[in-house]
Amino acid sequence: MSKFSLSSTETFQFDGDTVTVKLKPLSRSAMMSLAPYVGDGTPETMDNQKLFDHGAEHIESHIESMKGLTDSAGTEITISTMVDNAYFLPLMSEIMAKLFDLATVSEDDVKNSNGRHSTSTEEQVTSEAR
Image (cartoon, rainbow, N blue to C red; front, side, top):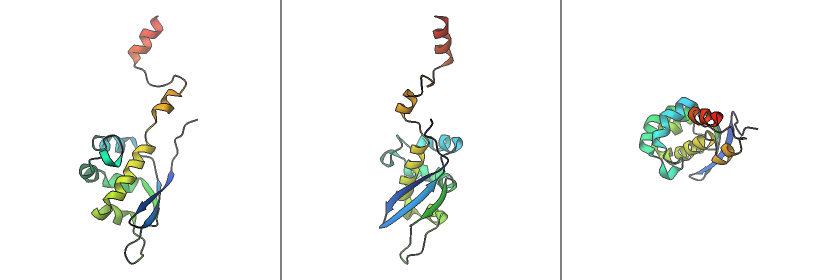
């Protein structure tokens, strides 16, 4: 059975707040447009400046809901306010890393796919000819 899910609820710690975010998996087009800026998918290897220059609309469209992020007066911060303010770049970096993690099949899962992992057509034809 696939580990794919149409949504995932994740919790992040940021600036004294416990932020709960319901994420939708990255679309294929979002993944492809952002891939050049993500390194190996961890916050440490992402090119945050380019990623957020190109990815703000993707972040916002892949967050279904967010709770727990508040301003200094205790007022809930909206998703669009978070995306529009540089103060929240560290949190957005963690969210983006999670989005990429959720959109990527692990090597172990590929290996456990009963031999159905990708092989080139040339390899298949060569194998069948033997």
